[in-house]
Each structure stands twice: as structure tokens, then as C-alpha cells.
Length: 91
Image (cartoon, rainbow, N blue to C red; front, side, top):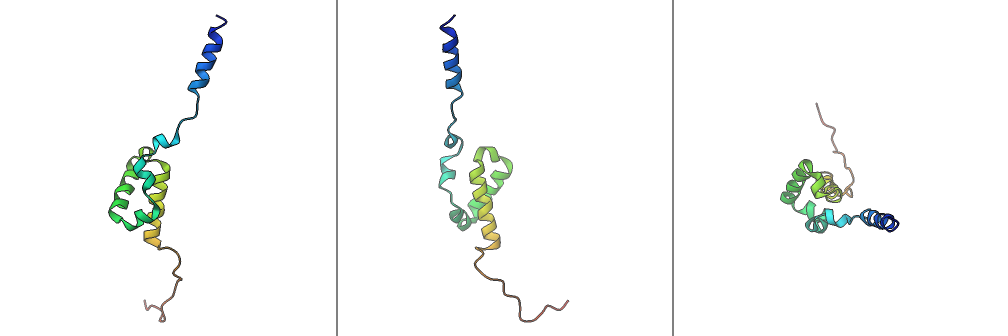
């Protein structure tokens, strides 16, 4: 009985080890960068749909990159200043 308690304690501590965060992230998602996604609209559209339906499988990091690439495609890189038209619009 005296040997059983330390053994159970050791087993419980071994079971509580840190999980590998890379094991849940796909290796393909690790190679996708914001720039590559913004340059490939078909792949971006596919990943956006997958993030909407199954975010847990793809992982938070990849879905965050997909969202950033979508913003860059829609808003641009942010380096072009706003230039208003010379004539005001007539409504």
C-alpha cells in the first residue's frame, strides 16, 4: 500500500503534462502567410468558409491569418492616402 500511493501520484503527474500545441495545428496551415493568402483569392475563399464552419479543426492562428488577409484584400495595405475628388458629388 505504501508503494501504491507514490506510483499513483507519479502516473497522475505524468498524465497532466503539457500538450503539444503544434499537434492541433495542421502543417499546411503553418505555411500559409497573410501575403500568400491575400495573393490567392480562391484559397482565401475556401479557408474563410472552413473557418466559418469548423474553426476548431483549422485552429485560431490560421483563421486569424485568413481574417487579416481578407481585410488587406478589402481595405488595401493602408499606405495609399485618401484623396477626395476635386468636384463634390451632386445628389
